[in-house]
Image (cartoon, rainbow, N blue to C red; front, side, top):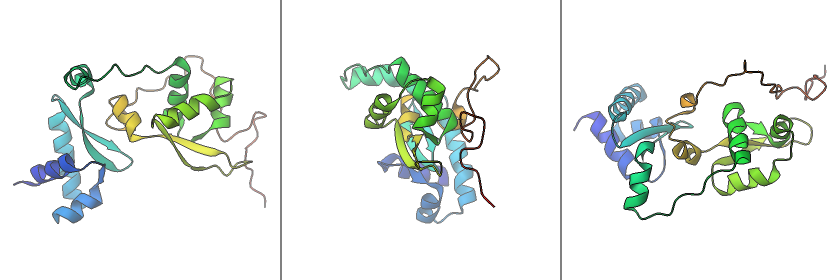
Amino acid sequence: MDLKSRIEALLFVSSTSVSIPQLANSLGASPHKIESAVEELSNEYKDRGIRLQQFNRGLQITSAPEAAKDIQQFLELEETSRLSRAALEVLSIVAYQQPVTRPHIDSIRGVNSDSVLRNLLRHGLIAEVGRSDGPGRPILYATTSEFMSHFGLGSLEDLPPLNLDAGSDIPDPMMDRTGSPENPTTS
């Protein structure tokens, strides 16, 4: 079997995402050869019913988002619940500015986002990824592989470009409301 087929077999049987170094170690190939084969596989899958999803340095075979309706009907699944406008707003902020804190999300939205964040955490679309060095050390949030699957993204680079020229007034996460840095360094 060629390297692409061997990679495909390992990704197919894995229930979690697999890193390039894991594949290289398991298959006795260089990471460069693995990356090249993975890129070929990804291109081959573009017009098929499966996709190669890449997220946080991990790879996973998933179904194509265009097949969601057929899969839902075949597996006799209930229609998945829709995300509220508030959830989509918060997800957008997290996706484009991750990692991001709740106070920063609140400053962009102009309202408290606690309950929305809790719901997104419960559904696995975002995760806590650490703490900021800013005052109070607020929790940092980022999107998850479940987010990637839900929206049919192969990587974060697949997000549509953010159009800031449309009059959007998104504040810089490193500045407080007065325009001063949140965590100034002292000499």
